[in-house]
Image (tube, rainbow, N blue to C red; front, side, top):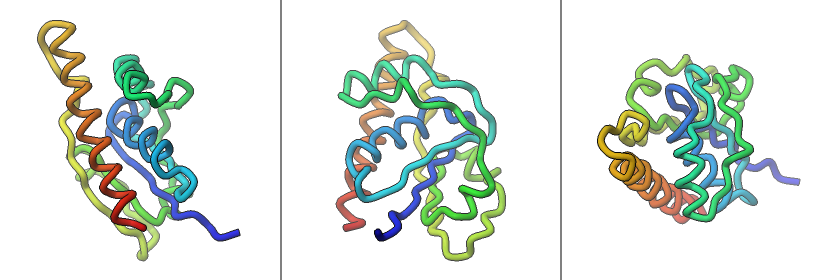
Length: 141
């Protein structure tokens, strides 16, 4: 059996953006990729991220918030950072053949305003991440 490319999504806290990317890529191309996500720290799974992903038909409620694993990082084919902080502070990647990309998205957890405005921030980021995942799956055929 051919080894699936390992995609490793990284964010600061592995609570929102990296979880959404992980969920969408598993839903859109899980049969083609091994997908993992982690953070520089583990902040726990954001319930609003779970809620907006459920609205989009993707259940991430069983995901865990994890800290970057050096072994997974070293074995990844793609390392994709989703926030500037993770991009700037990502550990040195030991695998010289890894493809490293930065796809920056606003942090919906920092949104302010009414509950509806905050939820709309989560939905905006969710939709942007979904579009990026769809583009990645299409381009990596």
